[in-house]
Amino acid sequence: MGLRIDRLATLYVADPLRRLRFNSKGSIPILMYHSIADDDETKVHPYYRTATAAMVFASQMENLHQSGFSVIDPAEAVRRFREHGTAKKSVVITFDDGFRNFYTTAFPILNRYGFTATVYLATAYIGQMRLSFKGKECLTWNEVRELSKHGISFGSHTVTHPQLHDCNASALKKEVADSKRTIEEQLGYAVHSFAYPYAFPETDTSFKERLRDELRNAGYENGVCTTVGRPGPRSDPFFLERLPVNSDDDARLFRAKLAGSYDWMSQPQYLVKLAKTRMASFGQRVRHET
Image 1 (cartoon, rainbow, N blue to C red):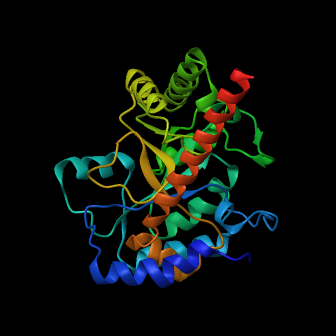
Image 2: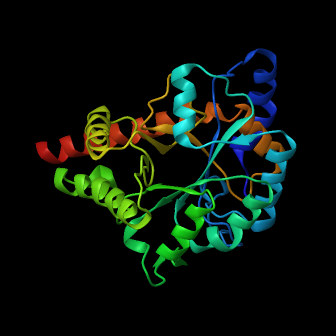
């Protein structure tokens, strides 16, 4: 395991400080998973890994169960924020991409504890026959329908999983609207939730406004992104913060994330994005002037 400065800072600085003075009962953790498998990610820094081994995932779900957490969906989280309802012991469990191992591995574990989840589908890779994305097999529409009958909810993760920030207006609209329409046609009911693929460009306010408008126009009511943290009453309902989880989240770090001790990561994350944005802008200006 590589050195995890984020883990050290969370457990030995942020968590003790939170216990002394931090109170955020209005926040609800939204966990972000991708693949539930023993993928080899040794060449990827632990912070950026997206695979969670089945045994680790089962341990994390047992942790939630023993701690008395109830699982809700994003819509219920937003409703509680708006009505200032209690968020105590509530958690949202989400999965991006729609990999087959959700059906074969994650769902049986969730079902063991009576938990549900929200799965965000990149619809170009969900078919009547088995398709793959990023080298992993994806769900079929028959499996999606079966999971839906057992209480799993589904949302859009675009059509082709592009960098939306780089899309023109027409492509952005198509990715947002067509994915929603396809899922609704396959499931027979309205889809209201959207998950932003890749790193969320939170520093680009004009893009966020355009995307929010497209989501509203398409009929979405809420959404999640990759900004780190736990959302609360002040969060944008279309860009709810999430907590990334993978195999390297041991029990202490997992509990600290649920409690809010990992929320500090949103600030350095924002500053890094801001620095990259300004460097890119500066580079474009230099090229233009020369």
